[in-house]
Image 1 (cartoon, one colour):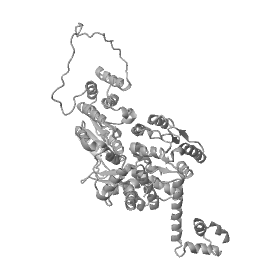
Image 2 (cartoon, chains in turn brown, red):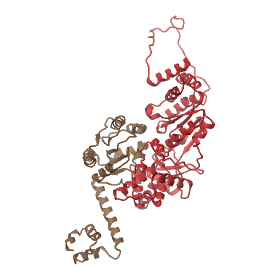
Image 3 (tube, rainbow over the protein chains, first blue to last red):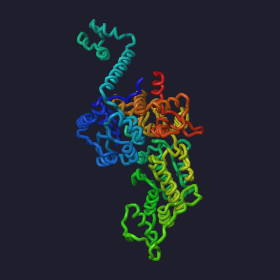
Image 4 (cartoon, rainbow over the protein chains, first blue to last red):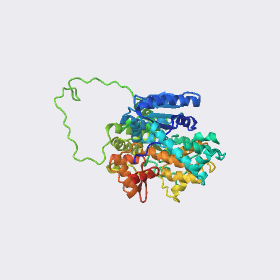
Length: 202
Length: 389
C-alpha cells in the first residue's frame, strides 16, 4: 500500500481558499513536482489577484532562512506567495523555526515547494510546521485525477442513498426511455455515470 | 473562522478573552503561585510544540504583577536575540536591560550599571594599548619566564562562573539591590533551541547567576532535556514543570476543558456538540492542533457553502491533518509508530525518536501514569497501512 498522500487540490480552488480565508497571518503549503514550483507560484499570484483585486507579493527567498524571515517581515501586512525554498538546507529550516515569533504577521503566506523541501520543513521546523498541519495540499495531475474519482464515487453513493429503490442501471434505462423523473439529482446521476448524452432524451 | 487561528499571536488571543483555565488550575496559575511564594526561585517549563506554554506565561505575567511588591517582565528571547547565536551571557544582558528599566537613575553606581548593560546590549568600542613584542612583568622588566597551568584535581559538579558571568553578576546585583520589590523574568522561546550543549551552558552560567542575584526566573526550555542524560539540566532549577498534551479521554477533565475552549470561540449554532466532541478527541489534547483542526473544518464548511461545521467537515480536517503529519515519514519511523499504536511501546532514546515527539506524531501525557500515544489524526492512517501490508 502506498503511504497516505497530502490532500489534492486544484490550483484554482487553492487560490479561492487563500482569498476567502479571513484569518490574519495564516500559513499554508502547496506541494507540487519540483519542476512545477515556479510556474505554479506565478499562476497562483494571478489567480489570487483576480479574486482579491490586488496582486500578492511573490518572493523567492533563495538566500536561505534569514532572507525568508526578512522578506516576511518586509511585507508584513500583504499576502505573500513564496517559492524558491527547495534549496534550503537543514540549517535554513532550523533558522526559520528559531525565528518563528518574527513570522507572526497580518498577511497570509503561501509556500509553494517540492516534496523533498516539504518533508524537510515538516521534519526540521516543528514549530512552523504546527502552523500548517491542517493547511498543506498537493497539486499534481495524478493526485487530482484520483481525487476527482474519489469525489465522484462519494457523490454517487450519496445519490444511491437518496433514491434507494433505484440502481444505476434503472436510472440509465429510464433516461433511455425518456421517463427519467424531473429532479436535478437524476441529471447529476447520469452525468456522473458518464451518460450525460441521455439528458436530451428527457 | 478567524477565532480559530493556529498561527495567531497568543497575546492577541488572551486579549480577546479566549483564554480558558486548564483543569486543576486554581484562581492563579501554578507559575504565578510559585513566583509569589518564592520570588527568587527559578522555574523551567517544558512541553511539546503547541501545548499552550506561551499562553500560560502571558496569563501568569499580570497575575504576578498583581501581587504587591512584585514586578514581572515577559520577554520573547527570539525577538531580542538570534537563537542560533544563543550562549552564556545573553540572558544576563537581557535581564540587566529589563532591570535597568525598573531601576532609578541614582545613585551613581546604579546609573553606571544601567549604562554597562546598555553597552553590552548594543556593543561598544574601547581603546586598548598595543602590546610590546617583548613581554614584561609587572615591574616593566623583560620577562624571562612563562606560565604553566595546573588544572585543579577536584572538579565541582557544576562549572565555576566564567569571568564574563562574574562581571555581569556584579552589575546585575547592583541593579537588583536598587529595585525594592521582587522581580520575576519570564523568558520564552528557548524551547526552540536544538543545541542542548549551548542550552546547558546558558543554564549553568546565566540561570545560576540570575539566582545568585535574586532575580526570579520562569524559563521555557527545550523538550529534549526531558530525555536521556540531558535531564540533569533540569536539576539546576528550583522547580520543573512539564506541560504535556491534555488528556482527551471522554469524560475526563481535559476533554471538558477542550470543549470549553472551543465553545468560547464558536457558538453551538456554528459548531454543534458532535463536531466539538470529535475535534477535541482528534486534537490529542494539543491546543494548537485543536485550533488548526477547527479552522480547517470551518474552511471545509465554507467551501461547501455551509454556515454550520458538521461532523463530515471535521472528518475532512482530521484526514488532511493526518496526511500532513504522515508526509515525509520514513519506514523506521512508521515502524516505531506502529509499535506504539499496537503495543503501547515507545522509549525515546535516539534523535529520530525525540523528533517524533517534537513533531507531535507521538504525544506524551504526563501521568500518573505517564504514557505516550500516536497522534489521533494519524491513528486511522496507520491502521489502514498495517491492514494493507
